[in-house]
Length: 391
Image 1: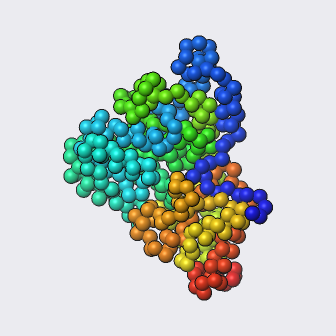
Image 2: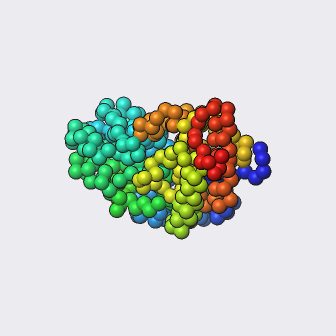
Image 3: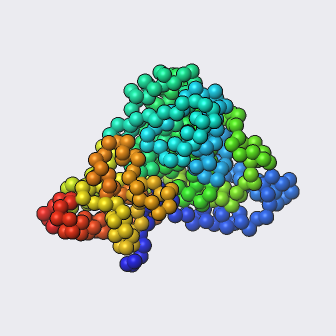
């Protein structure tokens, strides 16, 4: 490793914010169970309910609409537990969903004995509204639809309001995985039209191991995990008080829109710098609305696995897509669904910025990525074309 490490993989896990760290530590000093009636228990309950209010404000709902879980994956599975509860006749999910949504959809389909269908996307990764309309027309009386608010790999934002109008026009229910959009772009559940959403604490600078299943309006929730009846019977299990407290603080801080504007300026500077030196570089979904912190880029002749190792040795942490499969660098199902050429997709990496990212970090990445491109060009005799001024 050379020099100080630079972390540019916020879409995988954001560094824990100092304020959230302090909240976690303070809560761990307590000894109460949030279900106990004595003072220690009431103190723990107060921390949970304060955090619930903060998470609710982040997405524009009432606190009773928030159910805490162990993370985004569990929250997604709890969402799909509602398929049978709503009498769904078909499950539809977009082709670019996170694997936890795809797996939860297949499980729910098998349990409820209803069809499960992927919704195709266009070459930018946005759901095809025409295709969705056709699928809804044949999905029976009560379709259950899941479309992520923002893609974890490309950052592309889905047209949720238009999707919600279509789904509700067919008496369906719309779930969105909002793990990536929370704290990075404006997301209000009621104005977006979604019925339920999932969140994750560690994506916004909170601790690992805590998330939330959120309803737009308070309603009955069929539990996936039963037992002691915590979380109003929606999710049994003793609450992770320290994690929830840190999540609540991170949710309050994530509402700062100035930080999103700063990240977008840094992201745009990164893309401008790379394009000036490597004209063949491709920034996926850059012509449509994206998260302000995300750049998914590739160039012909690069290999993502080799590139990630070179960047890691240069002190840079980036990703080749979803970071939920340990030690695996595989083709992106997101870029596949978008119809991206195999050679170009094979060298794609994702850079995602956050609350600690600086201009120096951007300069360091650009220099290291360009150097890797130059090395690839020398060893292969082909590869991305470099601008003459940088050659």
